[in-house]
Image (tube, rainbow, N blue to C red; front, side, top):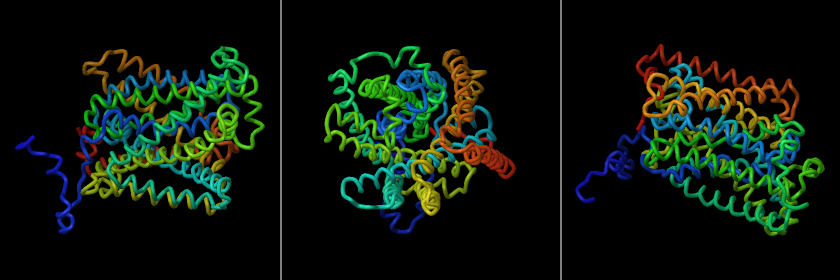
Length: 497
Protein backbone atom coordinates (compact mmCIF):
# COMPACT_ATOMS: atom_id res chain seq x y z
CA UNK A 1 0.00 0.00 0.00
CA UNK A 2 1.49 3.42 -0.95
CA UNK A 3 2.70 5.46 1.97
CA UNK A 4 3.11 2.46 4.31
CA UNK A 5 6.66 1.70 5.47
CA UNK A 6 8.02 -1.77 4.62
CA UNK A 7 9.88 -2.68 7.82
CA UNK A 8 11.40 -5.80 6.25
CA UNK A 9 12.93 -3.66 3.50
CA UNK A 10 14.26 -1.19 6.05
CA UNK A 11 15.91 -3.96 8.05
CA UNK A 12 17.52 -5.57 5.02
CA UNK A 13 20.77 -3.92 3.81
CA UNK A 14 20.71 -2.94 0.18
CA UNK A 15 23.05 -4.38 -2.40
CA UNK A 16 24.59 -0.93 -2.81
CA UNK A 17 25.38 -0.67 0.90
CA UNK A 18 27.02 -4.07 0.87
CA UNK A 19 29.10 -3.21 -2.18
CA UNK A 20 30.08 0.09 -0.59
CA UNK A 21 31.63 -1.73 2.32
CA UNK A 22 29.12 -0.52 4.90
CA UNK A 23 28.44 -2.72 7.95
CA UNK A 24 26.29 -5.59 6.76
CA UNK A 25 26.19 -8.06 9.65
CA UNK A 26 22.65 -8.92 10.69
CA UNK A 27 21.29 -11.22 13.36
CA UNK A 28 17.70 -11.64 12.22
CA UNK A 29 16.23 -14.36 10.02
CA UNK A 30 13.97 -13.58 7.08
CA UNK A 31 10.56 -12.95 8.64
CA UNK A 32 7.16 -13.84 7.23
CA UNK A 33 8.60 -16.13 4.57
CA UNK A 34 7.15 -19.58 5.17
CA UNK A 35 3.51 -20.64 5.15
CA UNK A 36 2.24 -23.70 7.04
CA UNK A 37 2.34 -25.60 3.74
CA UNK A 38 6.01 -24.85 3.07
CA UNK A 39 7.00 -25.72 6.64
CA UNK A 40 5.14 -29.01 6.26
CA UNK A 41 7.06 -29.77 3.07
CA UNK A 42 10.38 -28.93 4.74
CA UNK A 43 9.84 -31.39 7.58
CA UNK A 44 8.25 -34.09 5.40
CA UNK A 45 11.37 -33.86 3.24
CA UNK A 46 13.51 -34.36 6.33
CA UNK A 47 11.71 -37.65 6.97
CA UNK A 48 12.76 -38.77 3.45
CA UNK A 49 9.60 -40.90 3.17
CA UNK A 50 10.43 -42.79 -0.02
CA UNK A 51 13.96 -43.64 1.05
CA UNK A 52 12.63 -44.90 4.40
CA UNK A 53 10.05 -47.12 2.71
CA UNK A 54 12.65 -48.44 0.28
CA UNK A 55 15.68 -48.68 2.54
CA UNK A 56 14.80 -48.55 6.22
CA UNK A 57 11.55 -50.42 6.60
CA UNK A 58 12.53 -53.61 4.74
CA UNK A 59 15.30 -54.04 7.31
CA UNK A 60 12.79 -53.30 10.08
CA UNK A 61 10.42 -55.91 8.65
CA UNK A 62 13.18 -58.51 8.54
CA UNK A 63 14.50 -57.86 12.06
CA UNK A 64 11.19 -56.93 13.65
CA UNK A 65 7.71 -58.39 13.40
CA UNK A 66 7.56 -58.99 9.65
CA UNK A 67 4.20 -58.35 8.02
CA UNK A 68 2.90 -56.65 11.18
CA UNK A 69 5.10 -53.57 10.70
CA UNK A 70 2.29 -51.39 9.20
CA UNK A 71 0.38 -51.72 12.48
CA UNK A 72 3.46 -50.65 14.46
CA UNK A 73 3.67 -47.51 12.32
CA UNK A 74 0.12 -46.67 13.40
CA UNK A 75 1.12 -47.25 17.04
CA UNK A 76 4.16 -44.99 16.71
CA UNK A 77 2.03 -42.36 14.97
CA UNK A 78 -0.48 -42.43 17.82
CA UNK A 79 2.19 -41.85 20.46
CA UNK A 80 3.76 -39.03 18.44
CA UNK A 81 0.36 -37.35 18.02
CA UNK A 82 0.00 -37.39 21.82
CA UNK A 83 3.43 -35.78 22.06
CA UNK A 84 2.51 -33.20 19.43
CA UNK A 85 -0.48 -32.01 21.50
CA UNK A 86 1.70 -30.47 24.21
CA UNK A 87 4.53 -29.67 21.80
CA UNK A 88 2.32 -27.48 19.60
CA UNK A 89 0.69 -25.87 22.64
CA UNK A 90 4.10 -24.64 23.74
CA UNK A 91 4.93 -23.66 20.16
CA UNK A 92 2.15 -21.06 20.35
CA UNK A 93 3.98 -19.46 23.30
CA UNK A 94 7.65 -19.87 22.32
CA UNK A 95 8.77 -18.53 18.95
CA UNK A 96 12.45 -19.29 18.40
CA UNK A 97 14.73 -20.94 15.84
CA UNK A 98 16.08 -22.93 18.80
CA UNK A 99 13.24 -25.45 18.55
CA UNK A 100 13.60 -28.13 21.23
CA UNK A 101 16.40 -26.20 22.89
CA UNK A 102 14.32 -23.03 23.28
CA UNK A 103 11.35 -24.91 24.72
CA UNK A 104 13.45 -26.87 27.19
CA UNK A 105 15.30 -23.71 28.26
CA UNK A 106 11.99 -21.94 28.90
CA UNK A 107 10.43 -24.88 30.71
CA UNK A 108 13.34 -26.43 32.63
CA UNK A 109 15.94 -23.66 32.84
CA UNK A 110 19.06 -22.51 31.06
CA UNK A 111 21.33 -25.43 31.94
CA UNK A 112 18.81 -27.93 30.63
CA UNK A 113 18.48 -25.73 27.56
CA UNK A 114 22.24 -25.88 27.02
CA UNK A 115 22.13 -29.68 27.26
CA UNK A 116 19.23 -29.84 24.77
CA UNK A 117 21.03 -27.52 22.35
CA UNK A 118 24.16 -29.67 22.28
CA UNK A 119 22.23 -32.95 22.01
CA UNK A 120 20.15 -31.47 19.16
CA UNK A 121 23.28 -30.32 17.37
CA UNK A 122 24.82 -33.79 17.63
CA UNK A 123 21.58 -35.41 16.47
CA UNK A 124 21.02 -33.23 13.42
CA UNK A 125 24.67 -33.32 12.39
CA UNK A 126 24.95 -37.10 12.71
CA UNK A 127 21.82 -37.71 10.66
CA UNK A 128 23.42 -35.61 7.92
CA UNK A 129 26.63 -37.63 8.05
CA UNK A 130 24.52 -40.79 7.82
CA UNK A 131 22.52 -39.57 4.84
CA UNK A 132 25.66 -38.56 2.95
CA UNK A 133 26.83 -42.16 3.30
CA UNK A 134 23.52 -43.51 2.05
CA UNK A 135 23.28 -41.09 -0.86
CA UNK A 136 26.90 -41.60 -1.87
CA UNK A 137 26.38 -45.37 -2.02
CA UNK A 138 23.09 -45.08 -3.93
CA UNK A 139 24.51 -42.66 -6.49
CA UNK A 140 27.69 -44.72 -7.00
CA UNK A 141 25.61 -47.89 -7.52
CA UNK A 142 23.30 -46.12 -9.98
CA UNK A 143 26.19 -44.70 -12.01
CA UNK A 144 27.74 -48.18 -12.20
CA UNK A 145 24.47 -49.90 -13.13
CA UNK A 146 23.13 -47.37 -15.61
CA UNK A 147 26.31 -46.00 -17.23
CA UNK A 148 29.11 -48.39 -16.27
CA UNK A 149 30.96 -45.63 -14.42
CA UNK A 150 32.98 -46.70 -11.37
CA UNK A 151 32.79 -43.61 -9.14
CA UNK A 152 33.76 -43.84 -5.44
CA UNK A 153 30.84 -43.21 -3.08
CA UNK A 154 32.65 -40.37 -1.37
CA UNK A 155 33.01 -38.43 -4.64
CA UNK A 156 29.22 -38.52 -4.99
CA UNK A 157 28.82 -37.53 -1.34
CA UNK A 158 31.13 -34.51 -1.64
CA UNK A 159 29.48 -33.35 -4.87
CA UNK A 160 26.11 -33.50 -3.11
CA UNK A 161 27.52 -31.74 -0.06
CA UNK A 162 28.45 -28.61 -1.93
CA UNK A 163 25.08 -28.35 -3.66
CA UNK A 164 23.33 -28.74 -0.28
CA UNK A 165 25.57 -25.98 1.07
CA UNK A 166 24.33 -23.73 -1.74
CA UNK A 167 20.71 -24.25 -0.70
CA UNK A 168 21.61 -23.60 2.94
CA UNK A 169 23.30 -20.34 2.01
CA UNK A 170 20.28 -19.05 0.09
CA UNK A 171 16.89 -17.84 1.31
CA UNK A 172 14.85 -20.52 3.06
CA UNK A 173 11.89 -20.14 0.70
CA UNK A 174 14.23 -21.09 -2.17
CA UNK A 175 14.93 -24.44 -0.48
CA UNK A 176 11.24 -24.88 0.33
CA UNK A 177 10.18 -24.46 -3.31
CA UNK A 178 12.73 -27.00 -4.50
CA UNK A 179 11.73 -29.49 -1.81
CA UNK A 180 8.05 -29.07 -2.68
CA UNK A 181 8.65 -30.58 -6.11
CA UNK A 182 10.69 -33.45 -4.64
CA UNK A 183 8.02 -34.38 -2.08
CA UNK A 184 5.18 -34.33 -4.58
CA UNK A 185 7.15 -36.55 -6.96
CA UNK A 186 8.00 -39.05 -4.19
CA UNK A 187 4.40 -39.41 -3.09
CA UNK A 188 3.00 -39.57 -6.62
CA UNK A 189 5.30 -42.37 -7.80
CA UNK A 190 5.05 -44.47 -4.63
CA UNK A 191 1.27 -44.14 -4.46
CA UNK A 192 1.08 -45.18 -8.11
CA UNK A 193 2.81 -48.44 -7.20
CA UNK A 194 0.55 -48.87 -4.15
CA UNK A 195 -2.59 -48.51 -6.22
CA UNK A 196 -1.33 -50.91 -8.89
CA UNK A 197 -0.66 -53.56 -6.22
CA UNK A 198 -4.21 -53.15 -4.91
CA UNK A 199 -5.64 -53.16 -8.44
CA UNK A 200 -3.84 -56.42 -9.20
CA UNK A 201 -4.93 -58.03 -5.93
CA UNK A 202 -1.41 -58.40 -4.55
CA UNK A 203 0.34 -61.75 -4.36
CA UNK A 204 -2.47 -63.64 -2.58
CA UNK A 205 -5.41 -61.26 -2.55
CA UNK A 206 -6.28 -58.22 -0.45
CA UNK A 207 -6.34 -58.86 3.31
CA UNK A 208 -5.74 -57.14 6.65
CA UNK A 209 -3.33 -59.73 8.05
CA UNK A 210 -0.80 -56.98 8.83
CA UNK A 211 -3.17 -55.59 11.46
CA UNK A 212 -4.16 -58.86 13.15
CA UNK A 213 -2.90 -59.29 16.75
CA UNK A 214 -1.23 -62.61 15.89
CA UNK A 215 0.89 -61.08 13.12
CA UNK A 216 1.59 -57.81 14.96
CA UNK A 217 3.00 -59.65 18.00
CA UNK A 218 5.03 -62.13 15.96
CA UNK A 219 8.82 -62.00 15.65
CA UNK A 220 10.34 -59.12 17.59
CA UNK A 221 7.81 -56.25 17.63
CA UNK A 222 10.01 -54.15 19.94
CA UNK A 223 12.77 -53.96 17.34
CA UNK A 224 10.18 -53.20 14.68
CA UNK A 225 8.80 -50.37 16.82
CA UNK A 226 12.24 -48.79 17.08
CA UNK A 227 12.56 -48.72 13.31
CA UNK A 228 9.13 -47.08 13.12
CA UNK A 229 10.13 -44.27 15.49
CA UNK A 230 13.41 -43.75 13.63
CA UNK A 231 11.39 -43.32 10.42
CA UNK A 232 9.61 -40.25 11.82
CA UNK A 233 12.78 -38.27 12.60
CA UNK A 234 12.40 -34.83 11.10
CA UNK A 235 8.73 -34.11 11.81
CA UNK A 236 9.66 -32.29 15.03
CA UNK A 237 11.67 -29.63 13.16
CA UNK A 238 8.61 -27.44 12.52
CA UNK A 239 9.37 -25.15 15.47
CA UNK A 240 12.86 -24.42 14.13
CA UNK A 241 11.21 -22.37 11.37
CA UNK A 242 8.89 -20.43 13.69
CA UNK A 243 10.81 -17.15 13.34
CA UNK A 244 10.48 -17.36 9.56
CA UNK A 245 6.82 -18.40 9.53
CA UNK A 246 4.14 -16.02 8.32
CA UNK A 247 1.96 -16.73 11.34
CA UNK A 248 3.94 -18.92 13.77
CA UNK A 249 1.20 -19.24 16.38
CA UNK A 250 -1.00 -20.85 13.75
CA UNK A 251 1.42 -22.24 11.17
CA UNK A 252 3.59 -24.37 13.49
CA UNK A 253 0.75 -26.46 15.00
CA UNK A 254 -0.83 -26.97 11.56
CA UNK A 255 2.50 -27.95 10.00
CA UNK A 256 3.37 -30.34 12.86
CA UNK A 257 0.12 -32.31 12.75
CA UNK A 258 0.01 -32.21 8.94
CA UNK A 259 3.56 -33.57 8.64
CA UNK A 260 2.90 -36.33 11.17
CA UNK A 261 -0.31 -37.46 9.48
CA UNK A 262 1.09 -37.22 5.96
CA UNK A 263 4.19 -39.25 6.81
CA UNK A 264 2.44 -41.73 9.12
CA UNK A 265 -0.43 -42.54 6.78
CA UNK A 266 1.96 -42.79 3.83
CA UNK A 267 4.26 -45.18 5.68
CA UNK A 268 1.52 -47.45 6.96
CA UNK A 269 -0.42 -47.59 3.69
CA UNK A 270 2.65 -48.13 1.49
CA UNK A 271 4.08 -50.81 3.77
CA UNK A 272 0.73 -52.61 3.83
CA UNK A 273 0.69 -52.55 0.02
CA UNK A 274 4.27 -53.86 -0.16
CA UNK A 275 3.38 -56.72 2.19
CA UNK A 276 0.37 -57.53 0.00
CA UNK A 277 2.60 -57.44 -3.07
CA UNK A 278 4.94 -60.06 -1.62
CA UNK A 279 2.56 -61.95 0.66
CA UNK A 280 2.34 -61.60 4.43
CA UNK A 281 3.70 -65.10 4.98
CA UNK A 282 6.61 -64.67 2.58
CA UNK A 283 7.81 -61.12 3.12
CA UNK A 284 10.50 -61.92 5.73
CA UNK A 285 11.99 -64.80 3.76
CA UNK A 286 11.96 -62.76 0.55
CA UNK A 287 13.82 -59.84 2.15
CA UNK A 288 16.30 -62.21 3.83
CA UNK A 289 17.17 -63.73 0.45
CA UNK A 290 17.92 -60.35 -1.15
CA UNK A 291 21.48 -59.03 -1.51
CA UNK A 292 20.27 -55.76 0.06
CA UNK A 293 16.84 -54.79 1.48
CA UNK A 294 16.27 -51.93 -0.98
CA UNK A 295 15.79 -54.50 -3.73
CA UNK A 296 12.37 -55.42 -2.24
CA UNK A 297 10.69 -52.27 -3.53
CA UNK A 298 12.29 -52.58 -6.96
CA UNK A 299 11.27 -56.23 -7.29
CA UNK A 300 7.65 -55.45 -6.40
CA UNK A 301 7.66 -52.55 -8.87
CA UNK A 302 8.99 -54.78 -11.68
CA UNK A 303 6.27 -57.33 -10.95
CA UNK A 304 3.22 -55.06 -10.70
CA UNK A 305 4.11 -52.13 -12.98
CA UNK A 306 7.31 -52.56 -14.97
CA UNK A 307 10.93 -51.46 -15.37
CA UNK A 308 10.09 -47.83 -16.21
CA UNK A 309 8.52 -47.18 -12.82
CA UNK A 310 11.38 -49.07 -11.16
CA UNK A 311 13.90 -46.77 -12.85
CA UNK A 312 11.92 -43.78 -11.64
CA UNK A 313 11.84 -45.20 -8.11
CA UNK A 314 15.62 -45.64 -8.16
CA UNK A 315 16.03 -42.02 -9.19
CA UNK A 316 13.57 -40.75 -6.60
CA UNK A 317 15.22 -42.83 -3.88
CA UNK A 318 18.33 -40.68 -4.33
CA UNK A 319 16.19 -37.54 -4.63
CA UNK A 320 14.43 -38.43 -1.37
CA UNK A 321 17.73 -38.71 0.52
CA UNK A 322 18.92 -35.48 -1.08
CA UNK A 323 15.77 -33.65 0.01
CA UNK A 324 16.29 -34.97 3.53
CA UNK A 325 19.84 -33.60 3.50
CA UNK A 326 18.66 -30.13 2.53
CA UNK A 327 16.08 -30.16 5.31
CA UNK A 328 18.44 -31.40 8.02
CA UNK A 329 21.13 -28.96 6.86
CA UNK A 330 18.69 -26.09 7.31
CA UNK A 331 17.64 -27.42 10.73
CA UNK A 332 21.19 -27.83 12.03
CA UNK A 333 22.16 -24.39 10.72
CA UNK A 334 19.32 -22.84 12.71
CA UNK A 335 20.36 -24.62 15.89
CA UNK A 336 23.93 -23.35 15.46
CA UNK A 337 22.64 -19.87 14.63
CA UNK A 338 20.37 -19.77 17.67
CA UNK A 339 23.16 -21.00 19.97
CA UNK A 340 25.56 -18.41 18.56
CA UNK A 341 23.03 -15.61 18.90
CA UNK A 342 22.36 -16.45 22.55
CA UNK A 343 25.96 -16.99 23.64
CA UNK A 344 26.25 -20.79 23.81
CA UNK A 345 28.50 -20.83 20.73
CA UNK A 346 30.74 -18.11 19.20
CA UNK A 347 28.79 -14.96 18.30
CA UNK A 348 29.74 -15.08 14.61
CA UNK A 349 27.51 -18.14 14.22
CA UNK A 350 24.56 -15.96 15.20
CA UNK A 351 24.89 -13.72 12.14
CA UNK A 352 22.72 -13.88 9.06
CA UNK A 353 23.42 -13.03 5.43
CA UNK A 354 22.85 -9.33 4.63
CA UNK A 355 20.60 -10.13 1.67
CA UNK A 356 19.28 -13.68 2.02
CA UNK A 357 18.84 -13.35 5.81
CA UNK A 358 19.94 -16.98 6.10
CA UNK A 359 22.24 -18.32 8.86
CA UNK A 360 25.03 -18.51 6.30
CA UNK A 361 27.99 -18.69 8.69
CA UNK A 362 26.41 -21.60 10.58
CA UNK A 363 25.61 -23.22 7.24
CA UNK A 364 29.21 -22.95 6.05
CA UNK A 365 30.60 -24.29 9.33
CA UNK A 366 28.47 -27.40 9.31
CA UNK A 367 29.41 -28.03 5.69
CA UNK A 368 33.04 -28.01 6.81
CA UNK A 369 32.22 -30.44 9.61
CA UNK A 370 30.47 -32.75 7.14
CA UNK A 371 33.51 -32.67 4.86
CA UNK A 372 35.78 -33.65 7.76
CA UNK A 373 33.60 -36.47 9.13
CA UNK A 374 32.58 -38.02 5.82
CA UNK A 375 36.17 -37.67 4.62
CA UNK A 376 37.36 -39.47 7.75
CA UNK A 377 35.04 -42.41 7.10
CA UNK A 378 36.20 -42.50 3.48
CA UNK A 379 39.89 -42.50 4.46
CA UNK A 380 39.15 -45.29 6.92
CA UNK A 381 37.59 -47.34 4.08
CA UNK A 382 34.36 -47.66 6.09
CA UNK A 383 31.24 -48.99 4.42
CA UNK A 384 29.01 -45.96 3.63
CA UNK A 385 25.79 -47.82 4.47
CA UNK A 386 26.66 -50.47 7.07
CA UNK A 387 28.95 -48.15 9.02
CA UNK A 388 28.39 -44.46 8.25
CA UNK A 389 24.61 -44.60 7.69
CA UNK A 390 23.57 -47.32 10.11
CA UNK A 391 25.74 -46.23 13.04
CA UNK A 392 25.05 -42.52 12.92
CA UNK A 393 21.34 -42.68 12.04
CA UNK A 394 20.89 -44.89 15.11
CA UNK A 395 22.72 -42.32 17.22
CA UNK A 396 20.51 -39.54 15.84
CA UNK A 397 17.42 -41.55 16.85
CA UNK A 398 18.63 -41.66 20.47
CA UNK A 399 19.27 -37.91 20.44
CA UNK A 400 15.80 -37.05 19.12
CA UNK A 401 14.10 -39.37 21.61
CA UNK A 402 15.98 -37.64 24.46
CA UNK A 403 14.94 -34.23 23.15
CA UNK A 404 11.30 -35.26 22.88
CA UNK A 405 11.30 -36.60 26.45
CA UNK A 406 12.91 -33.37 27.68
CA UNK A 407 10.29 -31.36 25.79
CA UNK A 408 7.37 -33.21 27.42
CA UNK A 409 8.86 -32.37 30.83
CA UNK A 410 9.33 -28.75 29.71
CA UNK A 411 5.70 -28.50 28.57
CA UNK A 412 4.40 -29.80 31.92
CA UNK A 413 6.65 -27.39 33.84
CA UNK A 414 5.91 -24.37 31.62
CA UNK A 415 2.13 -24.68 31.91
CA UNK A 416 2.06 -25.92 35.52
CA UNK A 417 0.91 -22.63 37.07
CA UNK A 418 -0.71 -20.99 34.05
CA UNK A 419 -2.29 -23.03 31.26
CA UNK A 420 -2.57 -19.89 29.09
CA UNK A 421 -5.92 -20.90 27.67
CA UNK A 422 -5.01 -24.52 26.88
CA UNK A 423 -6.90 -27.44 28.36
CA UNK A 424 -5.41 -29.43 31.23
CA UNK A 425 -5.51 -32.60 29.11
CA UNK A 426 -3.41 -31.01 26.36
CA UNK A 427 -0.68 -29.47 28.51
CA UNK A 428 -0.42 -31.96 31.35
CA UNK A 429 -1.96 -35.41 30.95
CA UNK A 430 -1.16 -36.01 27.29
CA UNK A 431 2.49 -34.93 27.81
CA UNK A 432 2.69 -37.28 30.80
CA UNK A 433 1.33 -40.20 28.78
CA UNK A 434 3.52 -39.49 25.75
CA UNK A 435 6.55 -38.90 27.96
CA UNK A 436 6.17 -42.29 29.63
CA UNK A 437 5.73 -43.95 26.25
CA UNK A 438 8.80 -42.21 24.84
CA UNK A 439 10.84 -43.21 27.90
CA UNK A 440 9.89 -46.84 27.23
CA UNK A 441 10.95 -46.50 23.59
CA UNK A 442 14.25 -44.89 24.64
CA UNK A 443 15.01 -47.73 27.05
CA UNK A 444 14.29 -50.24 24.28
CA UNK A 445 16.52 -48.32 21.89
CA UNK A 446 19.45 -48.19 24.33
CA UNK A 447 19.06 -51.87 25.28
CA UNK A 448 18.99 -52.90 21.62
CA UNK A 449 21.39 -50.28 20.27
CA UNK A 450 23.82 -52.89 18.98
CA UNK A 451 20.95 -54.45 16.99
CA UNK A 452 20.01 -51.09 15.46
CA UNK A 453 23.65 -50.49 14.54
CA UNK A 454 24.21 -54.05 13.33
CA UNK A 455 27.52 -54.29 15.18
CA UNK A 456 29.10 -55.53 18.40
CA UNK A 457 28.06 -54.25 21.82
CA UNK A 458 31.55 -52.79 22.32
CA UNK A 459 31.33 -50.67 19.16
CA UNK A 460 27.76 -49.64 19.89
CA UNK A 461 28.76 -48.52 23.40
CA UNK A 462 31.55 -46.35 21.97
CA UNK A 463 29.16 -44.67 19.54
CA UNK A 464 26.47 -44.24 22.20
CA UNK A 465 29.01 -42.58 24.53
CA UNK A 466 28.79 -39.48 22.32
CA UNK A 467 25.41 -38.73 23.92
CA UNK A 468 26.62 -38.33 27.53
CA UNK A 469 29.61 -36.37 26.18
CA UNK A 470 27.17 -33.97 24.46
CA UNK A 471 25.12 -33.70 27.67
CA UNK A 472 28.16 -32.79 29.77
CA UNK A 473 29.44 -30.35 27.16
CA UNK A 474 26.03 -28.67 26.87
CA UNK A 475 25.72 -28.33 30.65
CA UNK A 476 29.25 -26.88 30.93
CA UNK A 477 28.61 -24.43 28.08
CA UNK A 478 25.45 -23.13 29.74
CA UNK A 479 27.15 -22.90 33.12
CA UNK A 480 30.01 -20.89 31.57
CA UNK A 481 27.47 -18.46 30.09
CA UNK A 482 25.82 -18.05 33.50
CA UNK A 483 29.16 -17.11 35.03
CA UNK A 484 30.23 -14.79 32.21
CA UNK A 485 26.90 -13.13 31.36
CA UNK A 486 24.05 -13.91 33.80
CA UNK A 487 21.61 -11.64 31.94
CA UNK A 488 22.04 -13.50 28.65
CA UNK A 489 21.80 -16.80 30.48
CA UNK A 490 18.46 -15.75 31.97
CA UNK A 491 17.11 -15.00 28.49
CA UNK A 492 18.02 -18.34 26.86
CA UNK A 493 15.22 -19.55 24.62
CA UNK A 494 13.38 -16.24 24.79
CA UNK A 495 10.59 -15.52 22.34
CA UNK A 496 11.77 -14.00 19.05
CA UNK A 497 8.39 -13.25 17.51
